[in-house]
Length: 125
Image (cartoon, rainbow, N blue to C red; front, side, top):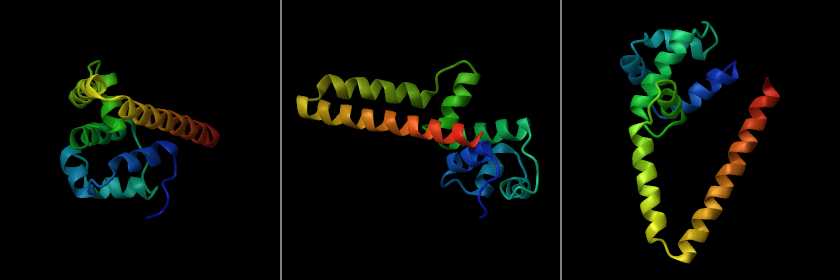
């Protein structure tokens, strides 16, 4: 597949992950050919199409960034986010010092990774 032509399309393709085009089309109500043409840069990416794809990804991958964006736009926390938050709080409560240290290291690595991604996206704009 050719590289997506816009940062938004690239992000949507990344968010699609291992969801097949057919499955995404079924859930979003978009024709498989339409999504294929958009990914190839042969058809414009409308705001309606973006929203439908994001909602489909949110349903199929509830822990995805798309799911978090959809839940924020809809004004409600995602079920997956609530579940993860509760699990994290419980794990922190019962973790020993070594486990807490390892978790903090992972949090720092993730935060720096996200910052690097933000900078990468900004540089493409």
